[in-house]
Amino acid sequence: MISIFFLLLSYLASFISPDGNFWWLQLIALAFGFLLLVNLAFILYWIIRKRNAFWYSTIAILLGYSKIFGIVEPRISMNKEPVKNAATEFPIKVMSFNVRLFDLYNWFHNDETRGKIFSFLEKESPDIACFQEYYSSDRKLAGFNNNEVLPKVLDAQFSHIEYTVSLRDSDHWGIAIFSKYPIIKKEAVHFEKRGGNIFIYADVKIGSDTIRIFNTHLESIRFRNEDYRYLSNLRNDVEQDEMAGGIKILNRLKRAYGKRAKQVDILKTEIEKSPYPVIVAGDFNDTPSSYTYHHICDNLKDSFRECGSGFGKTYAGLFPSFRIDYLLHSENIYSANYATHHEKISDHYPITAWFGFKK
Image (cartoon, rainbow, N blue to C red):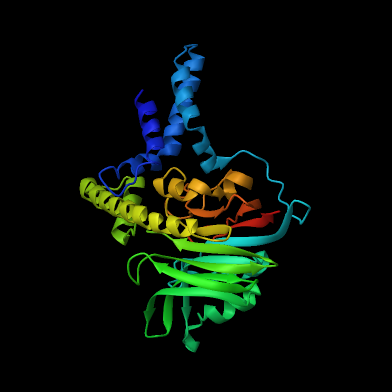
């Protein structure tokens, strides 16, 4: 009954904003996968015991069965690119990728990471690429003038780049959209102030139609090195002050959930104002069981759920089981061939899908 109770609470977290006293519900939503497994284990246990008690967990799971497909899709992927036919037109390939500053600070201890990112982008050749944690330097000696290099790598002459931080008038951090199709309008919205989180959108002209591409990077937990050490020590059973470390992490989670709730309200309002069909790409820093995901997806389709397969995890950091990067789209757009690319070139896996207009 305890496992059922917490599973039901994880469903409730999708509908209650964490910008208030119920932020802790998001922690339970974070554990949805674990709670699901526990209840499945109880179903198996009671069936083996030949007891009708298996119905309790079964009913609890069925009440929120759709959430399972936010984590895993059992379909077999055909792995084919969509083709233009009588029902659809203008298939385009869209990518969302948190590039982690193109490994500016050499996190991978490998000077070849940036080159591997460019090789991957050139091979995948998306029609529209949305980058989070984007970086470019105007200094010739820096070797990171990505604003000049990427249009050649992607064969995309149109772009919308917005900076949140600039240093020395030469080094820039922000977010970017690159497109092979003309961009006829572009806007940027800083959630609070420059230096914080952001979303941008670009109206892209494809044939006689226009589509609005949103690219966003929502509030992260902002773990520090001491937090990662604490979590690593927990895994390795190293002696430490667990109470103090745990309280710090809970405070960071509470702050992040509250900020994301406000940001997602602003983003959703702008999405609903769009005069065109939309594709929403980005790093949400939240799982499919969260209020963030549920609130944005209210009137949108999730391309992973529409045409993905297998486990959809996109974060390759300390918690590799989470899907926090998304490609969403309007009802009158179809999606096909969703893919998560398990390339070790960032702490996020790039994702791609093909999109087209329904006639």
